[in-house]
Amino acid sequence: MTALLRPNCQGGGVAGASNTQKLKIFSGRANKPLAESVAMNLGTTLGRVIVSDFPDGETNVRIDEDVRGRDVYIVQSTCHPVNHTLMELMVILDAFKRASPFRITAVLPYFGYARQDRKDMSRVPITAKLVANLLTTAGANRVLALDLHTAQIQGFFDIPVDHLYAIKEIVNHIRTLKVPPEEIVVLSSDEGAIKKALMYQKRLGGQIAVVDKRRASAVKTEQAHIVGAPVDGKTVFIFDDMISNRRHYRRRRESGGAQRREEGLRLRHPRRALRRGRGQTRRRPDRADRNHRHHSHPRREARQAAEPAHHQRGPIARRRHPPHPRQRELE
Image (cartoon, rainbow, N blue to C red; front, side, top):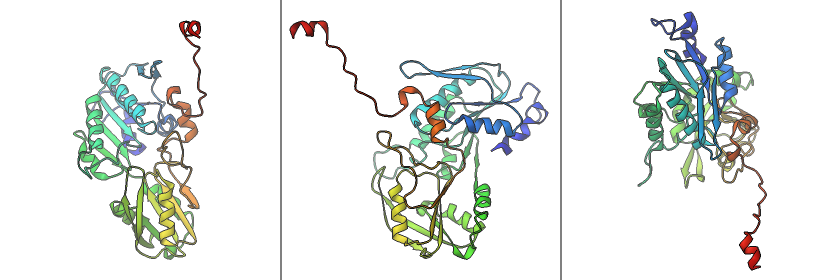
């Protein structure tokens, strides 16, 4: 991610532009540690922007420094709570648009609503396209995304999109595990992820298999069987960008009979899946021996620290309001 930003830091500005167009990096509250890490690698610090909430939950943004003529990058993952972080990003974009920067680039390590990228049945929205339109209208001139759920999401934007991949870093990490190539099976999570699985299989060696997956609802999937290489006694690597139901991984293992080790390699999410229901958290894929991730999605502790109080989940004691005076008289 820093590779695309680094050239603009040299000489204090964009190539061929004046010195006033110096790069500035700002961050929302979704994943501030990642933004600080990017800024540190570029030899700079985060810009000053104050993001807070009104008592009723509305987002308030104030830019605390001059950005006129600057090349602005805003780092914000639209992760849980998705609607709040997405709205926060749009408010931040609008604030910067009205501050007259040279260019605004929205850096999205995790792109929310990516799963809703097509009409798979009648009378459903294509929400990924809607989000693309919202970001453009809010003021983004360019988008920098990491490991999109599907590559065609780039076509939903009417502005330039830089799509980055973490495949080199993930592959280098896997090689440190010293697994012989003849024991490796790269398991595609579904038929739509075959191309991604082939990219990893080409670099790691081994064989490839595909899970025959059918989605029954937004939170329930059904697997019939595994197609391709046998996984019995093999080291199975699953490269997936999001996990919202650990039963999905348990059924993969049961249908394939893998007896040695199943690696749940998730490119975005940490050792938990997407939150579901009333704050319930799926800790890790069932029976997966190891989880590896990069930090484009915030850790649970960092996310809770940045999460507005009205969005934080947990046991809340029911409050009994005192009876109205007139009610007491009637009693």
